[in-house]
Length: 471
Image (tube, rainbow, N blue to C red; front, side, top):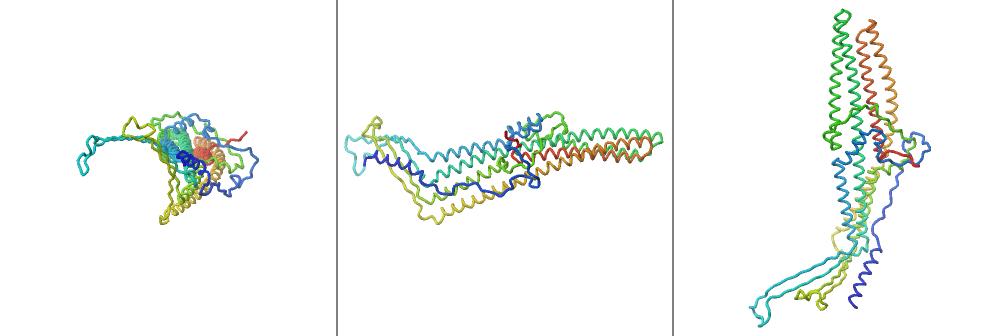
């Protein structure tokens, strides 16, 4: 048989054999018995199909918050690490995919040597002891993917690359939620500071009035001391609020990478409330969560690794071929008489390895079971987080309404007690008590609005973003 025919036959095998067999299980998405909607205690309304909005923080309509989140997504070190891991996974995918193609190498060598003219058989006169050798060879090697090992490895690498992208999205979602929560806390603290400073001015005015009444013999020294205690306690509360405000601002600076962060003054009441989610949110929205997608891609990768491990139990078939030239003179190396070639088929069959390869199959199977359990756990956890966030949003909305009514009543009580004290119908302790109740109630109202807004942030995170009806 001619060499060309042999090489052509090898190439034909290289084309036909890889499509013959794929060892290992094909991936099928696991099915979980989840309710069709979130909030199973509520009646589901007929809703339009919903999709997830990635830039959910823009629903708060605050340009400062938008800028902070955008800066964090660019400057945060966790995001940079996640992006670098994507680049690493992509490079690994290219490396694994390259194994499906032949490897071609060009080898060239030149040598010059001198042999001894003395010895048992000395060289005859006229024979040059200097010897030269030149060679150039183009070689190719190709592993036949008869059992699907290389294709399963590429399937696993592709899933790992996708998982790294979803890992980046998970980091971005957590980061944007953390920035939004800290920003809302910052605005809440600013509102609490403004309210406490207004209350402190009112208490200082009451203290000054009480001192005048003491000088006129209308009030007692007890009223003055009680007013001083109330003012000092409120001033100490303002100091603590300012400390918390500074700490929160520093946290935002670290998250956004802006260490000289300078934010304009704001108030939490100025932030519009995001829309409440409609009743009967479909549980299929969980597919938008990047951590759930990441867990599924990890499961796909581990499932493909079973095929890689099983293929190692079977023979490895490799085709090799080379073509080139070799001569004692550099000028003759490309001549037809100097041509050299080779072709062959290699077979490696594992005979005895004390169960090492079968143990790797068991390891891959166990890892696939772990990934399956982790995927199921991520879906269940995500479902619980959405339900918890839905309850928190709705309950905090009701709590805020009640506290707003209580705040308005406490404010009226302050006016009445102050007028009664000035008219001599009640003691100063009634004024102090009404002021304390109003301050506590107003602070509780601000904190309830903060809790309501942060609960909406948690809902956005739990859903993988904001919801939006499809047209």
